Length: 123
Image 1 (cartoon, helix red, strand yellow):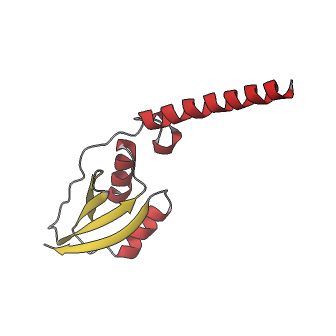
Image 2 (image 1 turned 180 degrees about the horizontal axis):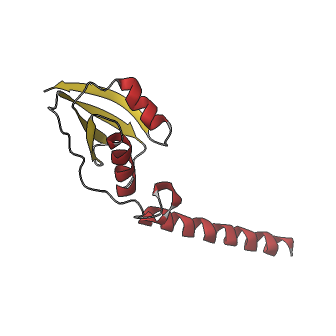
C-alpha cells in the first residue's frame, strides 16, 4: 500500500514539474516577466553629439522581456542610449558623455542581469 502512495506522489510531482517546464520554455515562466508583459518603447534619442560607444557583455538575458528590461535600465542612465542584441548577449550604449563602468555596474547590480566585459569604442 505504501508503494502505491509513494508512486502516486512521485507521479503528481513529475506532472507539476513537466507542466512548469513547458510553461517556462514556452515564455510563460516567472523568470522573464511572464511571457510578454514588458514591452519595448520607442528608442531613446540623444540630443547632443555622441562621443563614443560601449559594448556591454550581459549575462542572464533569455527572451525579449529580458532584452526590453535591460534596454529600459540602461536608457535610464543620463547621457546614454542603449540597444540590446539578445542573440549576442550584448548591449551597445551610445554616449553623449563618458559614462563610467561603475555607473553601469551599479545600474545592473540591482537586477538578475550581470555585466561582464565592457569595450570602449571612440566616435
